[in-house]
Length: 289
Image 1 (cartoon, helix red, strand yellow):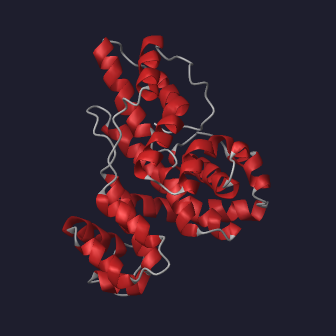
Image 2: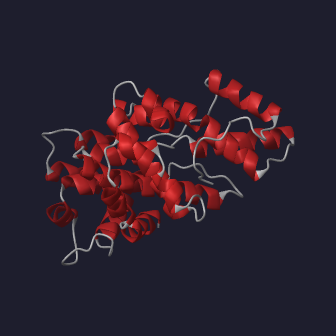
């Protein structure tokens, strides 16, 4: 369901469905997902310089299902623990507060995605794309000496509006008894997910750089305040599409984008990022389970 952005939002879109969608967006009648309480608290804790491992462990422990998922992921081959991790305190010692916070936020956000009968595979693909974008954003941030935790969150949430748009347009189409072609759905997602994502960012009180990445990653030259991480998000999205959607574009097309030059990345930097494909895919599969 994820493709390279840039399509005209009205190509192949049924006019009645589009009008109804715009009206719901403009009149704030879009059903937005609720941010899991633990995700919000972990994000706040992760951005608190005084936060310590004990507080994070206690917070995660309050949700036993979350704690179990975090330990499963921490013990996965993707994180290659030297010895089995048997407790959250041990996980903190092995992975660090930032890494454990990242896992906890990701796991808690997984179930936020809309449940849409008949579109389960599309929702899963959107989630895998979000995960791959988050992982790649971290790696680009390392090359840029930018805050990796902030970059990961921008990558993970940059297309958070897509599942909501998908649920909304399929609901509208069903109400109007109008079938939606796959290309029309793609056009809806590409054309409207940023607008809906901004609503979610406001509702969830996301950090300013995350909200800006959602709004501008496709047109990063217009980003007003956090252009570097918005560019990082743009490239992360592009790399995620490249590895997850076979034939989306070839290697030459991937490299022929202004974002590489604007980030001052050289051909060897691009090679380094592309060489991480299997590592990124392993992390995506681990997190997506």
